[in-house]
Amino acid sequence: MNKKILLFIALVASAALSARAQNLVNNPGFETGDFTGWTQWGDTSFSDVTALHAHTGTFGAEFGPTVSDVGIDQNIAGTVMGNMYTVSFWLDNRDTSANNRFSVQFGGMTLLSLNNAGPFAYTQYSFNVAASTDNALLHFSFYNPPSWWDLDDVSVNAVPEPGTLGLIALGALGLVGAVRKRLLV
Image 1 (cartoon, one colour):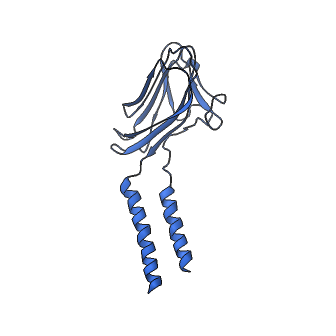
Image 2 (tube, rainbow, N blue to C red; image 1 turned 180 degrees about the horizontal axis):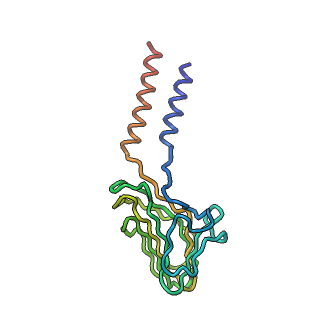
Image 3 (cartoon, helix red, strand yellow; image 1 turned 180 degrees about the vertical axis):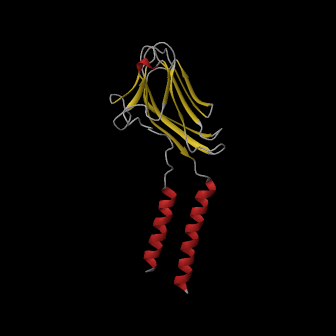
């Protein structure tokens, strides 16, 4: 009986510690086959969701505006001003002319800005940032007249507070100690 209780406690503590934060982005991998959940703006003439250049899943988004910048925005429901979030996405640049630009902002704070970048395969970018407002705006901007930017697997996840993880660990240790003490008596 005592080994079963210890095993149960270990499993509960393990599950609590390994729980992943929920992605707050609507349609993060464009798996609806379109820009559902996103607001498009600018020169959208060469922007679409395609199965040809997905990082994972079936679809990914591609942007190749020829006249002016293009982009997509999404207000991230559930973000709280002052709380920390991890903003992550996968980006690919198919341009060989280095006549391009890309930027991403979260809550008005620029996280990444690329100008005249050479070509690169899908690369993950990840940033820890405090939300400057509730329901912070996630804003992507692209310009690449001779070629394309590809975007996929966008995520915004709350960063767990270090104290929360510590409390879970202390609680699990306390339960193990209480069970051991009870078994020794």
